[in-house]
Image: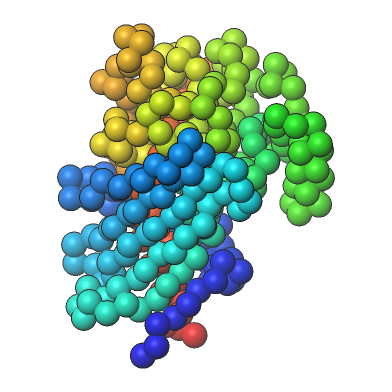
Length: 312
């Protein structure tokens, strides 16, 4: 059987965001239960703006083994490119090569959607997004699947980017979307940070009570989007404790400042999915989901795509 090549343009036809969020339930259960046996990814730094991540991943008694190689650069568009190779555990043969950029965008958005379902106020109607790239788009798509959002505010380093991206969101989702002053974030907002910034995007005082934050842009120990003050006063949930303790600058920096400790992390997202930990306790709490990404999320998306390919 020939190796199947799945281009980025085909991914959306094979799995929707709604289905991806469902797949993330499986992924985070597996991440929590199998954390000790999931390999830590390799990070190859070429320079300040360019790096490559190599991520092998499998789950015991599962039919596929995958190896993801993804190239990340803040100096080019698209900023994420690469491939996911899908192998048969039984035969060891290569079955498929899939576009890693599209799957990364989809599964990262879906993870935030899942976290938002558990951690945000159910009556949250305002979404604030920092960033105007592909990841920002998928964050919006995912949040609209789990909450009845009426308005979307966009924060960017460029007014022109904010206006252009806002127009794109209005036209694609038929929702009110406009550039936002970060000093005017409403209470009970859902906030997604999807940037390449190495410094905090806002001040602690900019975030009112009742907000939920999905921090997905930073994945290096020396960079962060979230200020220490927010980490200190938030209920913090992570995608994977092992990975975040090594890579999540949003958490590592306040710990190095001796203002906070990893021991204060409330739980992993998988624990919420399994009902082993409490979610939001009141409507004034600030909750923070910190994600650096895990290869089992990619495997969850690959599972669905392979199922669809078999049906076709």
